[in-house]
Amino acid sequence: KTLGKRASSAFGRSHGYNNSKEINWPTSSSSSSRQRTSSAQNSKRPSSRNSNTTEISQGILEREQELMYDYKLLHNIAALRLKYKQLAAEALQYLWSLSARQRNAELEQRAAVLEAEAAEILNRQDEILLDENRDIEFEDEDTNFEEFIEAAFEKNKKVPQKSKKKSSIPKSNNRKLTPTNNSSRSLPAKKNKLPPKEKEALEIDNLDSDADEITLAQRILELEEEIDKGKKKIDYKQDDILPAEASEMGTEATIRFLKAKIRVMQEELERLMMDCNLKDEKVTRAESKAKTATEEQTKLQRLNQNLQSQLDKYKKVVDENKKKGETLEAQLTTLRKELDSSQRSQKQTAVNHNAVEVRLNRALEENEKLKLSMQKAKVESKDSKVHERKRIEQLHADNKRLEKQKNELMNGFKKQLKLIDILKKQKMHIEAAKLLSFTEEEFVRALDWGS
Image (cartoon, rainbow, N blue to C red; front, side, top):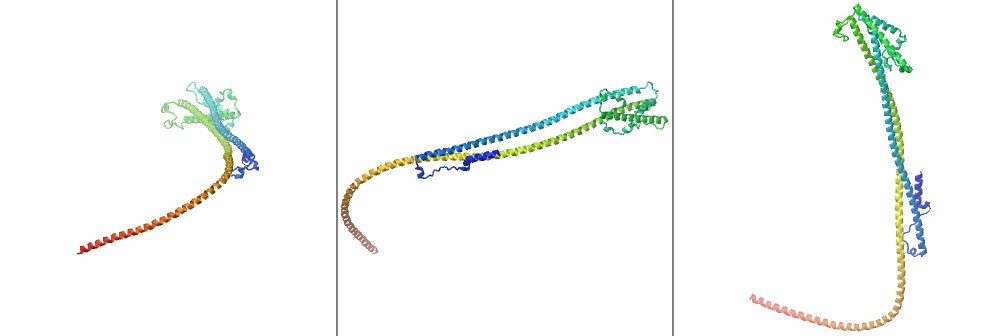
């Protein structure tokens, strides 16, 4: 609005002088009466013209200043737009770099925590295996396996009745897994300060491991009873549990071999469970990361939409300013052309005025010269009249004399014409005589030829 007001005010000043006056430019085709006015009026006209030209030049200068101010505003707007784009790009890059750095840091921290937990679990497993080996080592080969089974039953009797209900919980939901009951004893002092959720998970895992031990012990007892009764015979060829050499071994040796193999299988099973739990944790973390990434993506999309809307607004403002600048440039060019034309017309009028003044001065000088010449001519005309009368009289006399001479010459000319006619007639007679003589001679010759 301010730009429009300034443009209208400057245009009005430059063209209409506040819409109250109109410029009446002097023309070169002015009448002779206006050119022959007094010197006082001629001295007043240049002052009024100079005042008009000064007002026009002042209006044009103000207009140029306003246009320069508008151009500076447009330049500043363009610079701010570029800075805004750069800042937006830097902000987006910074956000992406921050998110990537935070993710990398979180992943490194989680990897370090997982490595520490895995190392602790392996240490615990080694300690548990050592404790179990110490408990299970038999001094003699003749020791009964029933003592080991009774010890396992005694351990399992200490488990409360709620274990059956809690053991039905799937192991995939348990984030933290402990291999056996003895692992809870070998935990360090730092792990005792766990949150309630992790403690519950540890208790559930311990109960599950105890239930597995009960089922294994029961299965081993059933196998021993069947072997003792002779109901079931083990086919070593069909099963891959024992090698071919185990057929020569005794029952106690095979039992010990199977116990060792069961321990190895338990360790492998525990490791597989640990790997499954770790993979579950990784999956949950990946899902959480995906959720955070989608949230960040939505936020960035909103930011991008807002930025694009702002950019569109700025583009519209810049386009409007460009259009205004173009209109102002067109007005400025028209004003400059008008100023140039007015200056040229002023120069032409000044040149014409000077030329007219020079012509007037020359005409006045010539008029004075003609007046003097007229006076001289009047005096000379009086003298010439006398001389002319005398000349006329002389001319009349000469005319009479010449007429007489003319008459005399005409008479002589007539006489000469008569003589010429006579001579022509004589010449004709002579030529006719010659022709007649020639014809006579030819006639005679013809007669002579005929004879």
